[in-house]
Length: 145
Image (cartoon, one colour):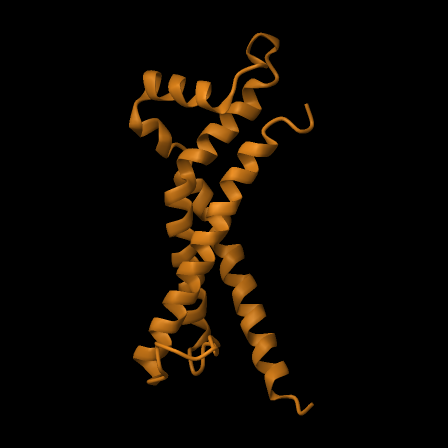
C-alpha cells in the first residue's frame, strides 16, 4: 500500500521539474533581455536583473502551466493507479494497464482529466516560491562578503 505508485510518481515529477525549470530559466532570460537589455546568450548570470516581481511570477506560472500540460497524462495514470490499488481485484494493475483502459474507455480526452485543478494547485505556489527565492537571492547578492 504505502509505496503503491511510487515509481509512476517519480516518473511524473522528474520530467515535470526538468520542463518547469528549463522553461522558467529560458523565459526569465528572454524577458530580461527584452525589458532590460541584458544579454540573452552566454554568461553564467541568470538573475532576473531589473525584472519586476510580476514578471518573475509570470515566468513561474507560465512554466508551471507548460510543465503541467505536458505531464498531465502521466498524472492521470498515476492517480488512477493509486485509487485502484484500494480494490483487491485491481491491485495488481500496472501503469500501462491503466493507460490502455483509460484510452479504450475515455479516449485521448481522458488524458486531460484534472488539468485545470492541477494548474490552479501548482501555479500559485510556484509563483510565490520563485518570488521569495529571487528576492532573497538579490538581497544576499547585495551583501558585502
